[in-house]
Length: 159
Figure: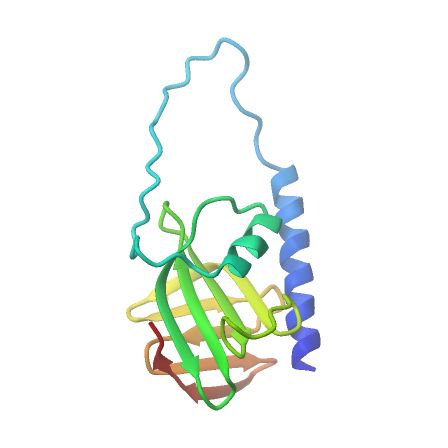
């Protein structure tokens, strides 16, 4: 049941992203004066810790091309799940979880879950899947709410 929910969350996010990119406004017409704004490639999080390559691969499949750096990494020993909160150079946050951690089998939609549009609320990060399921994490707890049923796990920082 949980695997199906995760899989459907990923499908919905992918479809939403694809539809959203179709409705982007077109750029300025030919000859329009558009100021050139330099883009910084320095992340606002910890520039020394790159998020897992598998996370970058998933992000790329969803059209996210910016490098992602680790803001927080915790592990729920009870489930064996590692959760990463990562940030792109523009400050946008992303959630990634993988059952078994970074060295375990990594299959998006089965053992792994990637969510964009993470919201920071104090020291807690909240990610919401398209189906309304939520994942809240800080340095001591992971709260997963699926169909209104909340489960809380103790976590520990993993650096």
